[in-house]
Length: 341
Image 1 (spheres, rainbow, N blue to C red):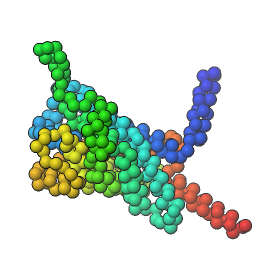
Image 2 (cartoon, one colour; image 1 turned 45 degrees about the horizontal axis):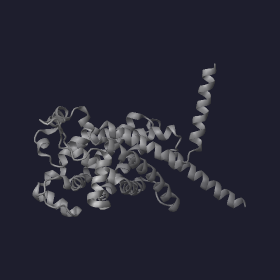
Image 3 (cartoon, rainbow, N blue to C red; image 1 turned 90 degrees about the vertical axis):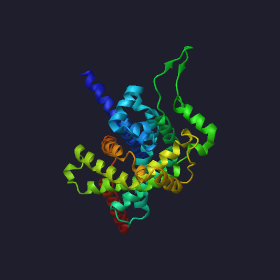
Image 4 (tube, rainbow, N blue to C red; image 1 turned 45 degrees about the vertical axis):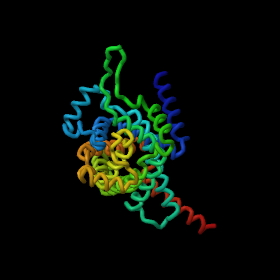
């Protein structure tokens, strides 16, 4: 009996905390949890994709399964998660900001332009600006994650003098931040940000566009079905990524340029780099790792959207349909009270 009383008290305390939280804080938490979980699930595929994109020939020549075997043999299981600490450290604030600002931009557009349609174009615009905002705040973490994942470190070997030898450039997240900042300043931490912004605006917008558009055609009774959300999310990520993938390759190569051989051509602007890759490496390089990315995007975006919707429900964040009904009701109440006054 006492145990049930304690559980009831805990439940009431939890309800009180949720009710007292501002809406944007709930959306930040939901987005951060969704992003961190989705990113960790696909971390091994992300590592191999980065090695393909940045043209480490020893991996491109042996293909996907050969790359998995090589990483497992030379670096062990933890090799699949090299750079994932920086990746999660980036994706949690990135996803939190991305989802939260998407909701905020969406509400701001509706409030500022009440006559605007509530169709998929609204989600396209809000998603695009949300993606750009999140990238600007978290880009240095993405650069650090890429540089850590680019490193291929063999197990330490003891030489004749008994000193462990290693070709590791960066020892961890803070070390990578420190060396990058000392070497190139703040500008170095934002190297490759332009193609990121060029890519994220259409990608983030299209991702939300396709996801919300597909959900609009789902019967009302199925909208909270996890499998339905997974399917809608995976298709949305797949379509969005296909249109913007070459810019992702440009960004990765710009991020790791300082780690490549000194005789590599200088990569300057986004379009210049895009043209240079197409000319010197072939246009197929602009889609290098795309097949792996498809394998990664399907579960990543699907899990992200699904977990976000579950978290929103758990934190009692109103759905878009509920929010629209509330806005319409409030508007009618305002009009009625003004007529009576």
